[in-house]
Image (cartoon, rainbow, N blue to C red; front, side):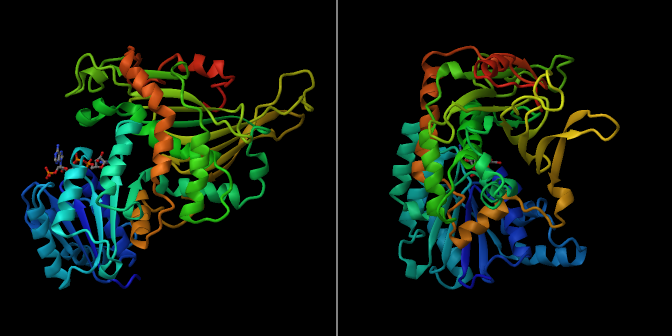
Length: 491
Ligand SMILES: NC(=O)c1ccc[n+]([C@@H]2O[C@H](COP(=O)([O-])OP(=O)(O)OC[C@H]3O[C@@H](n4cnc5c(N)ncnc54)[C@H](OP(=O)(O)O)[C@@H]3O)[C@@H](O)[C@H]2O)c1
C-alpha cells in the first residue's frame, strides 16, 4: 500500500462519468486496499449538494465486485463514503477552489499531500478550471509538497489545430509530466493483453507482418443510438468520438513494433512511430453513414435526425468506415479496415487479423483455396481471443471445416476482470503513464483524420442512411472490395 496521503479531486462530480465510472472504480481500489491508507475524495461541481447527498448518490452505483459478502461489503462502503466530500462552486472561480483547499486542509491537516485532479467536465470548461485551480494554489510544482497529477478525458480538441492549442494552454498550468490523457480503451484488460499476446508468445511475431497477414479489421459497434448525448455528439460525430481515439489506439497496439523496454517511454515511442507511418486518410477511402429509423415500426428506435436535440438536417456521421495504410516495411500493402457505428445490429469491439491464403489445397486439389486463418481479439462484449483454423471434421473421409481455438476470458480465468477505470486510476496513483496518450501521439492521431474532417466540413456530403439495427451502409462493401478485403469471412 502507498504510504503518502492522497487527495482525489473530481471536477464534475455531479456528472455521469463521476457517478457511473470514477467513484465505483475508486471504491473497488479501496476494497482491494490499493489506495493509500490516508486518502480522501473531494467531489466538486456547480450543483448544490451536501456531503450526505453526494454520498447517497454515489452509493447507488457502488458495487462489491471484490468483496461479495454482504456484511463486509456494507462496512467497506461505509468506510469509503466517509472519505467522500463535496464542495460546490463554479469551475472558473479561484475562490471556490480556495474553499476546496480549506476543506482539504481540514481533512489532512496540511495542503502538502499528493493531489490527483480528474477533470470530468465538458472540454469547454477545461481551461477555466485549470487556471482557477492554479491561482487558488491547489496546483503544486514542488515535489516536496506532494505530487500534482491531472487526468483529462477526450475529446482532446476538435482537430489537430485545436488539439495543439489545448495542449499548449493546459501546459501553462500542468506540465506534460503531470498530465494524464485518458483513453479508457487502453485500460481494458484484453487491450493490455495485446502486448503480452504479441511479445510473450514466440509463435505470433514471425507471422505479424505483410508477409503473412492479408488484412486487418478493427470493428467497434453499438446497438443503441446516441441516447441523451445529442449536444455533444452532433458537434463531434463518430470519427472524433471513436475512430480517432479508441480505434486508432487499437490499431497502434496491433501494428507497432516491439519496444526495447516495457516502460511508458519506449511503448509510447513505438506507438508514435506507427501512428506517424499511417498515411493521412483520403476522402475516397472513407464511408460515412447516419442511422435512419428502424425498418419495422420505428417505435422507440428513431432516426438520428429525430433524436431529441439533433437538428433535422444534421449531416453528422453516426457510422464511419475507412481503409488506412501503414507505410512501413512491416505493413506496406496491408489494408486496415476500421469501422465504427451506432445503432447497428449488435454491440462489439474486436480486432481481426486475417492471414494469407494457403497456396493450393493439398486436401482437395483443384477446389478453391482453404478458408484463411484468422486471429480475433474480442474486446467486448465477451472478452476472448480465438484463432480460426482448418480442421478435419471427425469421421470417415477427409472433410475439412474452419474451427475455432477459443480462449474465452470468463471461462478461462476465475478472478474478476477489472474495469478499465480501475486499472487506469491505479496507474495514475502509481505514476505509470504507459497507458496514457502523450502529446506527440495525440498530434499524430489527429494528422490521420485532419484532412477528411476538414473535407467533410468544406464539402458537406449527405451521409449514407442505414436502418437502425442494420449492418450499416451498403457501400462499405465497395470500399472493402476496392482494397481487396473479403467481408464475408467471419463477419
Ligand atoms: N460519461 C462517459 O462515459 C464519458 C466517456 C468518455 C469521455 N467522457 C468525457 O468526460 C467528461 C465528463 O463526462 P460526463 O459524461 O460526466 O459529462 P456530463 O455529465 O455532461 O458533465 C459533467 C458535469 O459537468 C457539469 N457541466 C455540464 N455541462 C456544463 C457546461 N456547459 N458548463 C459547465 N459545467 C457543465 C455538470 O455539473 P454541474 O452542473 O453540477 O457543474 C455535469 O454534472 C467530458 O469531457 C466527456 O466528454 C465521458
